[in-house]
Amino acid sequence: MNEIVFSVHLEKLPEGYYLATSHDLPGLVAQGRTINETLEIARDVAKKLIESYLQHEGKLPAKIKNKVIKSIDIPLAVGVS
Image (cartoon, rainbow, N blue to C red; front, side):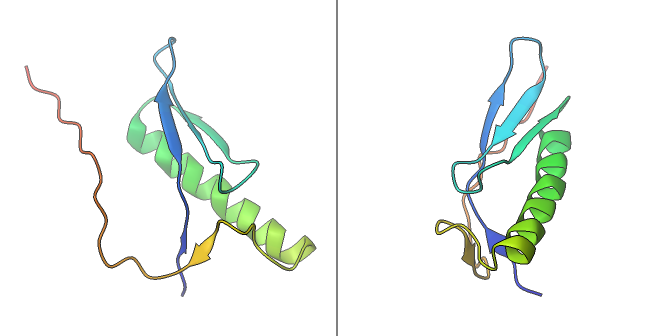
């Protein structure tokens, strides 16, 4: 199984929800109550979008890459009281 790697922009909305979008994968929009929930929803939406691109257009957008992640730096937020 190949992994598709692309960038996701995550922002906190004034209402307290999180919104995920992507310049790499047009059409990706996901909203959730937590960062984890939003990224989970974004992953599901991305999978459906990628399957649709492949089925209807036969190719992925140019910024999308098939590759195996060897390492990545991810900011990790930890709540402390």
